[in-house]
Image 1 (cartoon, helix red, strand yellow):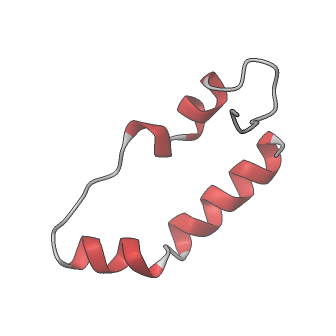
Image 2 (image 1 turned 120 degrees about the vertical axis):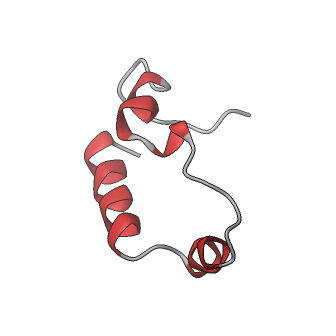
Length: 54
């Protein structure tokens, strides 16, 4: 997945969060984590592309 695609997905999720996150927030469960930040995601992909480990 390229960084522009990740950024677009994160922007969409900020505007329209997945239902399980909305429900958790409404119930006061969970908080935003540092990895939700685009800069933190960029730091995880030194070659510029996020790839699954395995």
